[in-house]
Length: 431
Ligand code: BGC
Image (cartoon, rainbow, N blue to C red; front, side):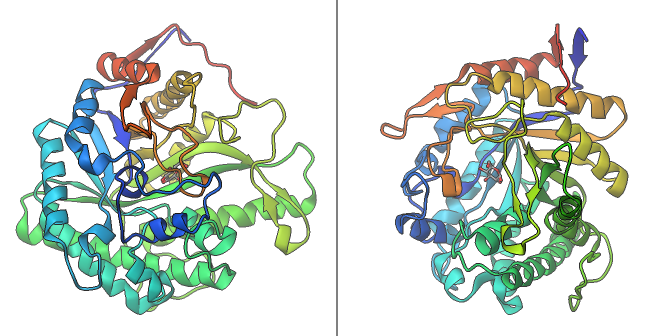
């Protein structure tokens, strides 16, 4: 392979989320959680990259780097720091940020929920109670009124599977109330809430705006694989994982179909997504034991692979595999809502970007409508339970001074966005 090209119709940019970069979010459950020392490296999300005070500077970066689209989240706990009390300054701030993106020709994509909940919401049981949905819907409605004229693309929820895995299975996300029942109870609330928001956003656009919205979920898909000679229970485990971690959310949040034996009052089969958001990072080896409590270990080394700073195996073909599978299943446009790697020394990020874009070019060549690629992430950020140590940014952040330094891979990505082609490309398929 000597050359691959990417069409102009593929919009390319980057993604972030509020808690991970903004700093000084006083009323998020993640600040409380991180200050209780539940983060592996002992850091907190108190300051992070201080993006909230540096929006202009960061938009300049997006421009310098030629980004055409930008995915960001609105922090609910800023908008509604106490139940029923709304902060007009936060409304103004987000309105101005999104306006600035649009005025600079950068298409915004807005995420309404990216792992963080207001403390007051957590304290009333958050997603564990179906009746609590009304609070999130009230917030979301306000954001749609605030930003609808500027925004077409909405992500209602980021990675429900990772959110509930963290909060209810691993206990690495707040409030850490572990339990399989909590996992499904919370998930069902979120699923129902997504379906309502899908309809609400469409109704609002139909009644008030002269355009159609594109609404969906950013789904995390992990490429699970088995050892060469798996135990029989591992072949069952991988199917089970795929079903409860992937299909359960995809089916319910795309077409109102519950693949697990559940029933949600009011959730009708139907169409609840205008696109499939695909967040893809790595391949994970499923090692199971016949004991339920040690069911699987996800990042055991698959011999001979290539691993990023967090020990995740880099496996670009996984992006092609999921893009194809999701399109064949749902016949909806595919948006790569996240893809990236922690690489503090910026040694392999460039190759990572090229290899994953190559997989997108394969999908496009087969006529699969991949419309956006959001690299994760614009800036170094707070990587949830892993803290500030992993460096996912195209742009390095010095956390002491908050200075930004553009990494070489960001320039490479800029050139690809501009030129749409990679020459002399050699790709060794990973086995
Ligand atoms: C999340 C991001 C996170 C990234 C890297 C995704 O699971 O949406 O918030 O930083 O992956 O782990």
